[in-house]
Length: 316
Length: 289
Image 1 (cartoon, rainbow over the protein chains, first blue to last red):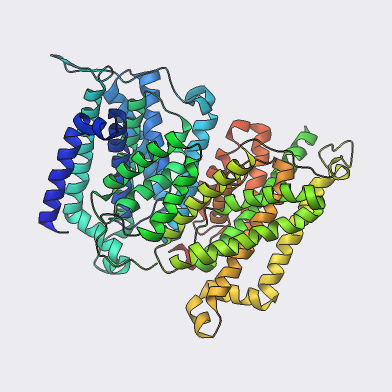
Image 2 (cartoon, rainbow over the protein chains, first blue to last red):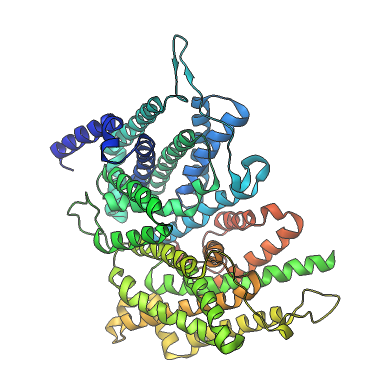
């Protein structure tokens, strides 16, 4: 990684993210869209922690995103009407699920790992869709909303002020992304990249492969859960589509489109994808076909992503 | 009660047979080409709608014969144009591509034939019950079971006793060596893909008369098929077959006792197998890593 280049990238990204609410409308966007981009970008970056930096393909991350969303929504609706407690429960739910599923499938590699994640990914969709009394089934969980945060001396008006909520998500985004960046720059991250480049060699160097991949998987699912909780809070609503397999594929395509070997790639991918979906779905009822075509085009022509660097493709 | 139980078990077995047909094709493509074909469900749906269109022109049985073949031809074309350039790349890319393809196929079916479920005609003499006690035992159910058994037997015959099958099995073990021995592995992978899609098309044409036509028909069958492959054991087609049937019966049985969990039970089985027997029921040891 080029240090100086990274430095400039960081400044540009943060300048855009911090100011976007004030100019996004001039280029046809709106605040809600910007907020969605930040949230999906966090999920895609969390996925990419695993995909791009550990070299492990999960095609079931929607499950953890959705668990975060449902955990947050159900907690606020039924247990504790607090935004922060809700988010914490959402993240915890996703993390625990990630720990258990990770432990079950960690010994598999490559296509087989991917297939196991696909298989498990749908479990929570079925639960959310079928367990009507708690999850509301296909109708989702509504009739609740994010709560203002009371700091004692003042109250943060999260609910009535969307701009404040945007900066709240941006703060969480910064914390999560900062944590991932620190991890990747440290010895743990170097070990992950060693595993990505050559698993056998890493094993001979004494790296505990299973443990490292498992921890990476759990971190990735936890942050994905956080993103899910943030989306639930943005919409004041969740439904089973937040954890269906489509979303798993969408997160992967965001990472690949932006460039999965670059730290900020998934952010760019998420921005392009969300914007594209917004435009397509407002112009044609057949937007799913176009999304499918985007997938195919990305694979055929943008294999290394827009920010992809000249890294040789890893052979299967 | 006994009747109801038998009814649900037979339902489960038939659904399991569809899972198995689908999973066998998926498994063949995965074993030889390392491609997780997410579009498999889309091809199944296409097979069902092809059969629906054809049966108005050439009748039920003609459609059942021709529709899977057309689906398979389309599969050959897709493999040649879209998937072949991705061999040797990270499996991520073929998975993403077929994922996009699944979107296109399912949405395409919706655009062409509409989101509803058009009537799929099964001949009347096939749908009437064979016995008044066991009301569910219609000719069509027996017919489906016989046809699936025949198809699976034919598949295993091809794989075990023909040159093509020998090459497919050899390629699964070591494609490179097979290639140096003079076998055209490009054509082999192409044919293997087509064969897998043929099974999906056949499953679609049959399932349309049992589960009803809808654009989401294939997607609903796809996820359990992935589970069937893992439960049966990666690399083992016999395991895949067994996995599909087992899942079907498990779903059928759960429907009797606790309908709300009929889908989740699949994943309980998956979890159990992964804990107790990580390589799957009949999986080969080496396939794990």
